[in-house]
Image (tube, rainbow, N blue to C red; front, side):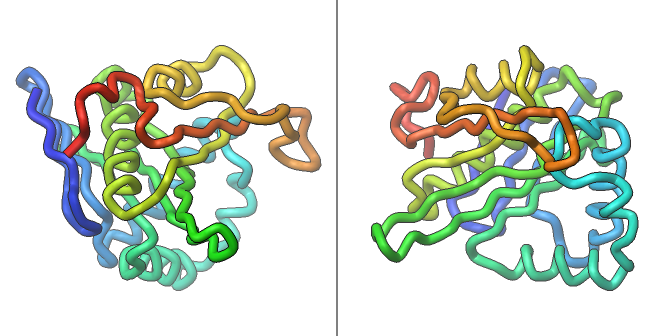
Length: 200
């Protein structure tokens, strides 16, 4: 498998596993806002327990708001909205954001909205999107990357742990009106699983 990580915002990651499948992960373009909207709504419908937002909330957004949201993310040097394609079909999405901390002169990244379509699982889509986000955040000066995952022995949590994320703090309610709990996780750069091999 050949992997090329993005060194700068706007570059793409291409993963080419054993044929016949080909996975391509790249930054969304502004024109792909309908793909972003559709994937996000599919994610909330298929995996409602994985996200803080709900399908009902997101369905209320008018199309111009979806378009503006993606355009703002694509144009920002601190955002990386990712689209995964498997054999040319839309396979998943993720969003990474860097937040400068002026008080401590540091930059921290956060990973949101990670989701892989059910018919595309088992092909490294989620792993590829997370690794792309890690590489991008590192190369843009972040000291680490945070995320939150639904409590339990889920495939998502096992993936994050394999990539070196550690649980931090106590579990919190995912939403005020839900019993679901989520666990914050943190990856300090330099402590990634297999970090003896430096990422480009």
